[in-house]
Length: 133
Length: 219
Image (tube, rainbow over all chains, first blue to last red):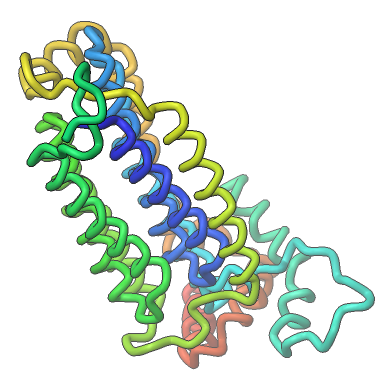
C-alpha cells in the first residue's frame, strides 16, 4: 500500500479537527474535535509502524498509550465542562470570559456578561476554598 | 499500467488500496459532518462513524489489536461519555443555530492553509514509499502483547497510574457540589457560593438549586 494514503488521510483528519476546535462554540463539540485530532495522530503512528517494521512495535505501543490518555482526557474534560455548566448555566466557550480583561472600546456587551464580570472575586474565593478543602 | 517496474505505481491500485481510499473518504466525510452539523447529538453519532472507519483502516494496515481497542475505547466508552455530557449540559435536541462561533471564517482559513501545507509536505516526502503488507503481520495481538509487556512495561504501568489519577480527579470534580456543604459551614462561604451559583439562574432551576444548597449548608 502506498504510504501517502494513510499519511494524507491523517493530515486531512487533523485539519478537520483543527477547524472544529477553532470554530465550535459548545465545549463538548470542541472535545469531539480534539478526539478527531488525536485519532489522526494514531493513524500516523500505526501507518509508520507498519511501514518501518519496527521490532519494538513503538508505534503501536504509543498508539495504545495515546488512546489511554485520550480516555483520561475526555473524562477530565467532561467533568470540567459539567462543573462550568453548573456554575455558569452554559457550556459555550465564548461566554466564559471571567478572566478576560474588560476592553474599554468594546461594543454593547450581552446582559449576562456584566453579571459574570462582577462574579470573579467571589468565584476566586470559591476556587480557593475548593483548593484548600 | 505501471509507472515503474521496480515498485507498484499509482495506476495499478490493489484491492487493499481501493478499500483504504473508499473507507478513508467515508471517514473524512463523517469527520467533516461531525464538525459542521448543527445538531449536537448528530455530531456525536457522526463521530461514531468516523472512529469506526478509522478502526477499519487499522485493520487494513494489519493492526488488529489497535483496531479492536479503538472500537472498545472510542466507540464504546468515549462516545457514550460525550453523549452523557451532552445530556447533562442540557444540549438542545434539534438544530441549534449558535453551534458555531463568529470566528468560523478564520477557523476555515486556518484549517485550509494547514491542510494544504501538510498534504503538500507529506505527499512530497512519501511519494515513492510503499508499505509492504505481505509477510509477517506487524500488528497481531501476539506481537503487540509481547512487545508491550517486554519492552514497554514501565510506561504501561505509569500510564495505568495516570488513568487512575484521572478517574479520581474526574470523580472529585464531579461531586464538588455535594461534598462542599458538609465541610464549609461559615455564613460567608454560604453567601459566596450562592452568589457564584446565581449566574446559572438563567435556566430556571438555578435559584432553587442554589437556595437548596444554601439551606443544606445551614443544617
